[in-house]
Image (tube, rainbow, N blue to C red; front, side, top):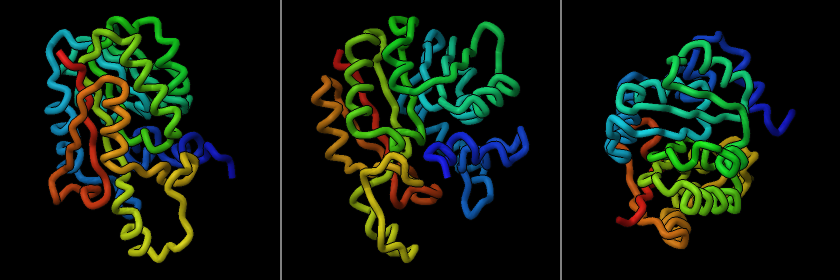
Length: 230
């Protein structure tokens, strides 16, 4: 099985409009509830504090089904994903002429090469940070700090919590697991302290956030808000 199967081949088995199954936003194979999606959207919106003129860069946008809930709050959207299939779905179902722009590419490389960097005011990385190595995450944050001077807020969502990993795998009778492998099904697990240290080393203020207890992933994940000091 290819290392990229989960992200590039797996989504193709579903109908073009089976958005949540394509990106594995599911519980026991079923799409998460609209209530869960609204909780995610509320968390992102509350953290990023959108203004009408904001330009959002969404790294690992997938099929943009989640991002589509944010379009009314911003003036322009740029989504990047390395799956040509999912980017195609995004363009088919969620394009708004003059407002949305979708690109196929690696998140870190795209951030380094993005020609609109100076216009980006907000960055979203939801549900994909664990599929980057720790070194890549560091490079990503340093690039945003140095090249994206107008970016005031970064929201990194759905990060697997390293302190909860043992309990997570024990409940599933899994004894052999790795916490630092971006190619594993869940990817790299982080502690909140590690993210705080990494963000602060780049210059950002860092706040750790959690979801409501009734959110489907609340037990073993956390969110990160990074802000540029005024």
